[in-house]
Length: 259
Image 1 (cartoon, rainbow, N blue to C red):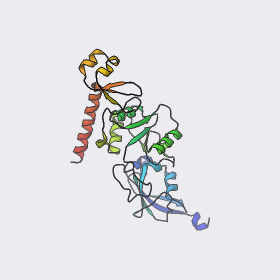
Image 2: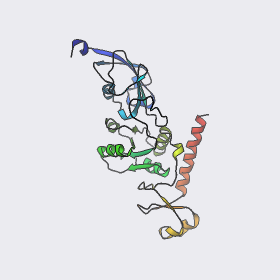
Image 3: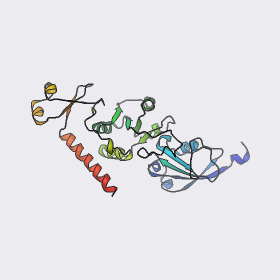
Image 4: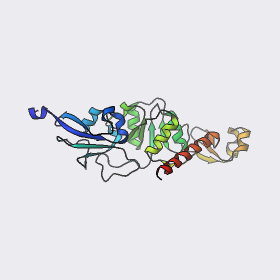
């Protein structure tokens, strides 16, 4: 390396929206300078700042979209944007071939309750109490699944193309966050998946499952759903009514915010 290249050079960065969660407070929501020895790529700067590749969907250098291997020049202005799952930017972004259009998820061990709620709304969600990070990544790549996690370290793997760090702690807040982040409103299909094992449910008559439920339940409810995999029966009881009301509030708040 020449003496000129060993001298650190200045670059201007600006991160948008939730990408700021990965930055120290003094760098959030503003343009800031960073100094690096050159040559250096965009990907190297993301690693040094702790921003996971999987959280980034668009990088502009001086207004032009570039990939992670793009080499920077002194005083370049770098704008970094989060994933646009609900907005197709495939004609502009150089980071991945396409956004995911069918929302399928795989969740880590911290998000079991969120997995059940997403399944209740009809989303294909893989979840197990104990699943190694490598297994999660491989399944996500194989099945085109979005990784949902509370583990920032997991998302730093360069093998992940679609992943999201869930910020909220409480389960209802987590569901609201994920629904809004990926604009899932039009994809709700309640009672289409088993909350326990994720298998598609089948609508069945009361007579078919009479031996699996108590007499009071059979008299009160008319619609029943059976999981052919784990043999559990579901119906629209009080828990479903509470979730239905929660979803209604989600939709109403979204329509209100859009004016």
